[in-house]
Image (cartoon, rainbow, N blue to C red; front, side):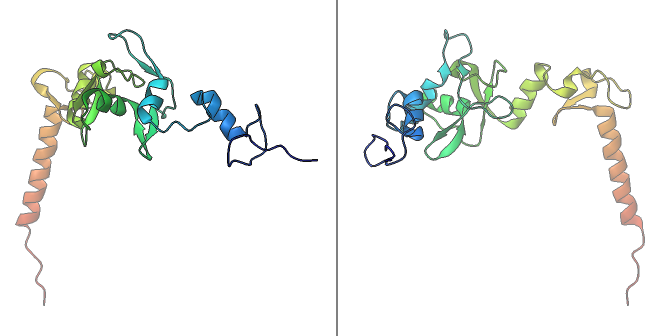
Length: 185
């Protein structure tokens, strides 16, 4: 009994469906063609569920664990919202983050994206009450986290506790300077 081979030129694999092997059949279902779609922009738009310009455009392709879309472009894995920003502006974000105004990780609408640093992204997170500490009204020592007592740097910190910690550290260092040095022979 002869095994039928894939009908695509130079393939030679065993038939799976529609006179093609499993790989070519999967390409046909995904791309609408037996050919591999190498253009990342076309593949990007294929996986975007687009609505009107003010709504989120949701990524329907593969996602990472926190819901951020991902695709392969130029031989490496890239985040879909970063790719969307690059397509829309023509500029590569480089070391900057591409942040979401809408707070939807799967959104790739360029109108909802902006460039920022880690600090900008954390401030945006805190201002929208999405940061875990933004729901706290007092620090663990009971000081209020508002007004002049609130420091926003690496999240939200109590100024009283930070000042006390820095003061203790300063005095600890001063004590070590005042101690007599051991005599070595």
